[in-house]
Length: 258
Image 1: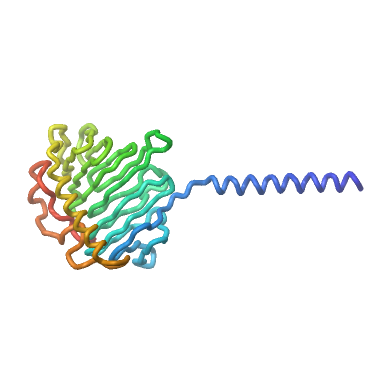
Image 2: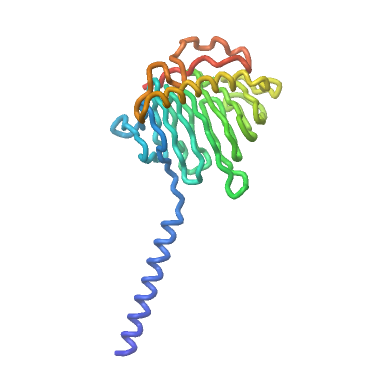
């Protein structure tokens, strides 16, 4: 009998230890979602049942599409502290491929700004994609604008170094440093000489963002932006016009397509 009780006690201890290990393992699993930390205007996530409004504190799951309306804006934070901003008239897939968690965003149309945090001073490898480009980063601040249905993509770097590769044309990865920008055009190979070091594109983006931030300050609260305060102007319908090379201001990204 004593042996039976001793065995039962051992089994209970083992079960308790196993349960504790499972709990610790569950806690150790990284959070692959994102949390809304700022929101103005029409910020939504495309779910199975349609558009779902997003507000500060809401969570975003992998493979959900972020949609912003005119005069709208959202800022999100992921588990490692990195953040990204989605500006007006944009449609962005969050973690398109769950099997590759380094691929944080797929910009379908519109304008985003990404702030990748370093991990204990080490590079934090992430990727942002578009219909024509792969942008590889190690821990930096950069912006991506997909301006039309062809996937024409502008990449601009505020801090650090990013690598840009054209998915639709042969060629090597082009590295951009702080102050550099480049335009990625469907079926046209990237050339290092196409890098704009004159910061023309960055100036255009900065003006867009300042308009948004000023609008937020004047709105007096989340969920509202004054008319004309959006980060990206309304579509111009220029299509392929103005794609002669890097350095010229981008056409305004089009509104999200259903």
